[in-house]
Length: 266
Image 1 (tube, one colour):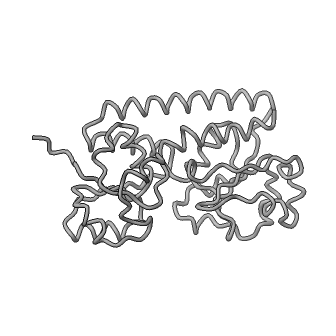
Image 2 (tube, helix red, strand yellow):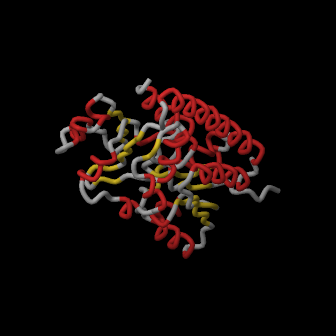
Image 3 (spheres, one colour):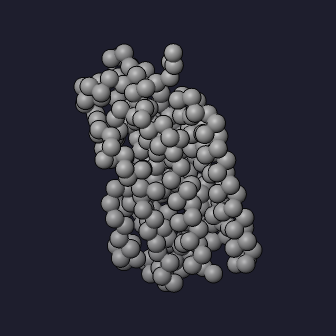
């Protein structure tokens, strides 16, 4: 008799995405209302939680034998579920390597290690290809272009680690890469928009969490008209759904999207 979990609740989108990619979606008993990948999951699976808040009774109602959570942002939910007797695995990855490790762990949890390793190998090839293309671009330009990435606008937040790493893989240099050591968004807040000006980004990428990026709002900030990215109209949006969740989509879709932004430099 199999002792693998049969009724999994996923409190963040990346574990839903992984289970679908592994062909193990039948094990999913519930998802977060903020799930974006794959889109079909929102139609096929009951939504039993938010992201950082949840009614424990709604989760318990689907009778999970395992809950997959993410980070301290879901710590209170995880605590309450443990008190209710539910098995909980909390992922806490913030890096590209962490994404790959998460995939392997999910695969082991559901007895699909071989498929997980194959998925990781596919993503590693995507990374290697993007890295080679990024190095070739940098050689053509004679430098690694500077990129300002904005994940939120009020206040300005930047430097989220896996995106900073993806910018580097794509051949760019994150203007605020030094902030990527901080897990919490509050530790990556820019004191004032003017601090971006001396960093002189060649490219600006916006990915505002949960809302549409507005380039005009960015380019109209005082003094930003002097930035190379604004002057040369290299201000782009990459949808937050493919970049701000630390899962396969960030590599499969987010990394090529960043590379296309950098391709605008020639």
